[in-house]
Amino acid sequence: MTRAEARERNRRALLDAAFQVVSRDGYRARLEEIAERADVTTGAIYSLFGSKNGLVVALVADYLRPYYEEIERVVPAGLDLLEAVDAFARHYRRGCDGPDALPRLSLQITLLDMALHDPDLGARLATSVRSQESHLIALFTGRSHSGGTVTASQAQRLTTALRALFVGLTQGVTLGLAPEADEQFFADSARALASGVTGGTDVG
Image 1 (tube, rainbow, N blue to C red):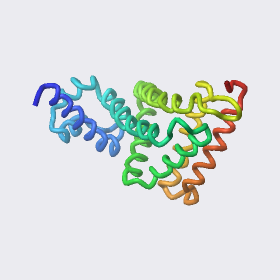
Image 2 (image 1 turned 180 degrees about the vertical axis):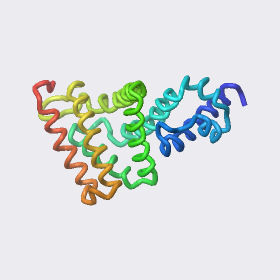
Image 3 (image 1 turned 60 degrees about the vertical axis):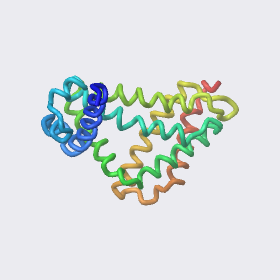
Image 4 (image 1 turned 135 degrees about the horizontal axis):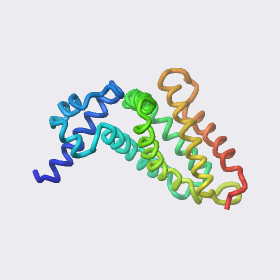
């Protein structure tokens, strides 16, 4: 194994271990346990990520990246805005029934708790999430809607609103508080939201 391969192996092992430990312990997560699970020393964490916060930020980016890549696959370019939002909403709802739904919810709640305890980490996490959400903004920008095309500003507002809607609905579904929220419910809610958010005067 080359040095680069070993470094990537250690990075992957640390991210996988951090997902388990951080999801369970939040800001109380110990670097020693993460390193032990990854079969490396704590020095490897500092070498690869700089700090515990650096590891957590990298964990979030690693967690979100395939999610946004999958969205780009299920929302093809030929759809208008409401069709794209509909496809996105249905994809998001299907994720609520996946085997990783509870671990994902646990991680989301844990990260929020960590951000509240550490403002610096909160700011870094927000920057990381916004960077990933740029994929969604690009995905919606330029789509046809109401006789015009969606601007980047509108797509940004829509992305923020959809995130809030889906996070809330997903928590309700996962916790059994929204049994009626099926794919059609997600799609109808998202379409209504998209129509309102993009109803301003800056449609091209």
